[in-house]
Length: 196
Image (cartoon, rainbow, N blue to C red):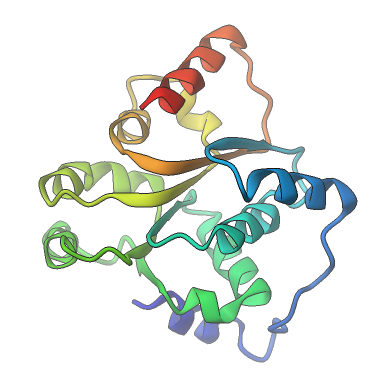
């Protein structure tokens, strides 16, 4: 399903299609520092606008292909934020959801193998399950934005962790509102992601 169509169905008439607020000074600082650079962790406290900040960065970087990987619960929040900040940009995206079978998703990845302008929003569980199809079809994203990455960074055995390590992207935006608790171990994992 096209992300714009889903967002229009969910939000048209109830959520205005305009910038809901100007970025706060610290968000502007984050946006200005990240837009021209590569991979980053966007670690802001809960409720301070990580999703709008990340959306603004993605829009500002103008990637040829983008994969946004939110949690199940956050997918609607991502769509809503993109609807508000830049509904035209949202028209580029396809949403892969649970309702699509494994075979339908496999065919999606096969049929989009040669596209250089693929923009997808898909939750962590599904994208981790589809890793083999993505790799088999040599699909590469210029930007991967992973929301709530701390949930899988702590456990290297999860499919989601293996997915992020296996995927190659020019830019990885790792978004989290939770503090890291293992300090040095998680910092090393992030450094390894940067080396790829």
